Length: 115
Length: 313
Image (cartoon, each protein chain N blue to C red):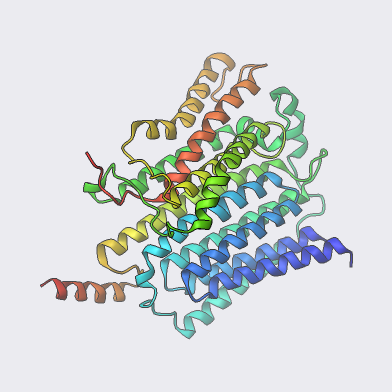
């Protein structure tokens, strides 16, 4: 097994680990973190494909490299937007959960305190 | 087993261990700190995959600025951590099954990639001399796929407008704050006084060298943003109110010049974002230079988040 294939399997595992965190973690901020993990695994798959396409004196295909650079920047922009949404959700409602039952409970408590 | 392969296996193992740790860490802040370490490790893997441009971007954005952003969010959301109900065992089992299947399918695909890998490297290198650039990744970003790069800038600006819009009405145009970090740390203070001159020089150099060697507007801009955030974190300087005109102008100047040069391509080279022969490199330097500033200010403001204090009249 060569190093490129090794990192390819590593990327496949990263996607799985990220997906697991995304599904099971109850806290939205940690889902965001897991989603970034999943994304980095996908980027790494691009890197493996690019490395295999090494030709013309280059260490890798520059087209996937440029795509991944763009992808990392866009992923950051999306993460910033999601984090800001979460903080606003918390400021408005006093909780930050995607669980609709828990959200209902939270609202009832806040209503009770204000009345 | 050769030494480099042993080294690479250890990188892969530590990387995966970090990823698992991020998912199972008890506290969000701990998970974010491991995520930063993970980003730096991943950058080393990118170097091993012969992609130094991506490695610089991953270290700067994936590890650095995302870390600052998430640490800030984690500090603000700390009160919600205790109340989160963990997923049930059945959910976990089903999720684990789905994830193992996904990983195995991907690993199978990796294992069965064709031996003669398709590549655009020869095509990218063939036209590179005409552009005057020496870095093929810069060639892809600013010549062959310039539209992608332009749209990506639009995404960054839209995200910034979106983040600012999340502030309550009375805070619109107010001042964002990096409240997550202790302001009186003397180590941080020393770093904030020592690093910026070196960091700014490194950022400008990285933009300048990007035409020829690994580097470019993204990486240079992120280092400039990091220096700005470092100074703001220690309280040496405050973030200016988001209503400041010069700051908004700085955020759009790069994309605006990119668009102007793009449309000038219709008149001068018969296509959108085409450069007239012989002028490609100077035009790209102008675009990259202004983009570096715009990226720096936009990334810094995105990491700082929406305004939290009203503007003082």
